[in-house]
Amino acid sequence: MRSGTGAKIAEHYSPEADVVLYPGDCRNLLKQMPPDSVQLFVTSPPYNMGKEYERRTTLDEYKAFQAEVIKLCVERLRPDGSICWEVGNHVVDQEVYPLDIELYPIFKSLGLKLRNRVVWHFEHGLHCSRRFSGRYESILWFTKTDDFRFDLDPVRVPSKYPGKKYFKGPKRGQLSGNPLGKNPGDVWDIPNVKHNHPEKTVHPCQFPVELVQRLIRSMTKPGDLVVDPFMGVGSTAVAAVLEGRRVAGAEMVSRYVSIAKKRISEAVAGTVKVRPIGKPIYVPPPTLAIVRRPPPSRAGNRTVESYAAVQAAG
Image (cartoon, rainbow, N blue to C red):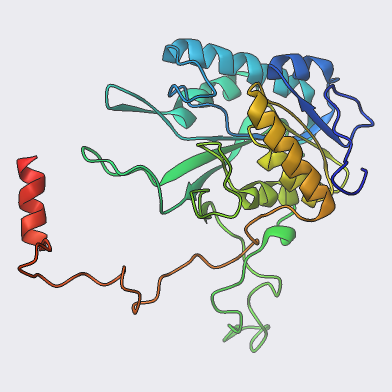
């Protein structure tokens, strides 16, 4: 890959290309790829919610489209490869349809095996008034065969008690945990990309680079091909470049393509803005004025009781 901001980004698939960003329908890009050529598919498809990058359809039409794309992906997946489909909820008339449940039968009908249903938890998002606010999404990790690539060591996280030792038996006195850290588990606390996030662009539903890096590190090796059928503003591509993997993806919104190209070039140059892996989630200090509850006053500050009364009335 060329260094600097002039990195070569191909628009059509080539086995020699380090980065492919197809400006169009992902189905056209996938049809350019040979069978058994992709080590990891990782994406977050549209949720059929009528966002600016999608046309809202019926849930059945949406699932039919997803089935077509997923089938194309499966045909191009290596025998030891993985598919990670990150989804949230589709909502109609205040009724929630969990997309992981809706899409699972499609993957299963194509012979894939579910290895994990990872819960991605975050603290910020839309505040709901008639149901609990959504603060998680799911990553469905499927494999094609039982002989799949997975390396836990690159994604281990610090142990809570790294000094813990065996207290009996032949290993008494020895450290009981892995010195590289522990398994991160299937609930991941990674901040979502909101207004003050260093990765924020104009995209309304951007997912964090760190989330993709964890998948890439554990399911691929350097030089492998990672594909995102719904590239958006290029978060998957940025993660792949930073991890030394080849990457391909498609995006239909022209301004997202432009942003993705810029971010990819910055990733090659080492100047792209990303949230550091493993950075602790921000906890505001108790001395911060915005953290402290204002005392009741005659000047109009609401007490808990007055706030509740206003909510009940409105």
